[in-house]
Length: 360
Image (tube, rainbow, N blue to C red; front, side, top):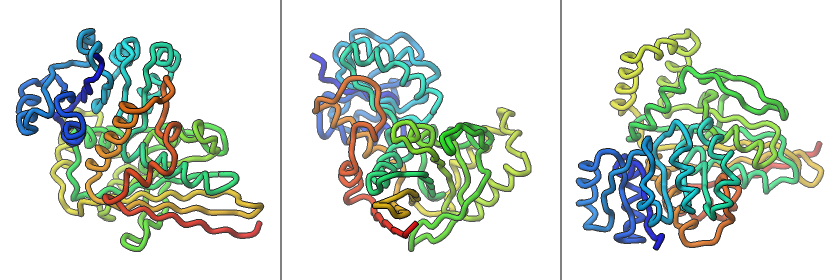
């Protein structure tokens, strides 16, 4: 019987939170999987048997017996190719991806027909960003008759505890260039350039935020049909944000190509505790409503970015595990409506939405 849930990277920072919550919902059916079976066993002992350990290496061929019993796989690790994902699809195993590598997610999208033909549903863009940012953008779009642009801004707390994978992903993207869609056409931009002062709400005020390579800005123009989408990043420490932007302007991040320097920067980010355990997300959408110009602002404030990422993953996993979704590959905003945004954030984050209309 296919009734197991396998969390790949299930003993990592976010994976543990996902496993614990799902273990309470489906005791004995959840597996914390990864290459280090000793770490998996150590973590699983703390769950009183609700979560079980599983040795699994996504770089190797997937065990057909494991997939024959797995109804759902939740992926918390970055992957270099889609071999493991295709194994899931071919076995009719549902798939939820918590990673944020746009190039990889684009590869998974190309397996739409393969997933559909085998009765598998894949949900991508699961987490805070992408994830809740996608649902907030959807909410803003639905409040207008036409949406011309969506600007997404994310503030992360330097005092928060971020997982190793998240820190490495951030550092690896400090010196990248990437494509975004502006006025319906792709343009190339660079991380930590083109800063804007963003109003994050009463508690945080205006902060300078800079372009960053979050995948939501590449996905939303296609899934929502919005001609211009951008995503920017800053930290709750304005000094750290300014320091990073200055280093980018001085082309210092080219040194990240040197492996020992990159490791040192990753280690430094992991040790920083100079801010708060907080995050803020702001959506600024511009469009039209009833023949008038309209602006929608969505604010989301909370604590512990990793915890809310896990909450979103558990929400998506529980939905696909217990409901009949269409088969194929989808992003969160294609399967869930704005009401899901309320359901996920209720009690753990503050959500506020404003709309302003002015005559053309």
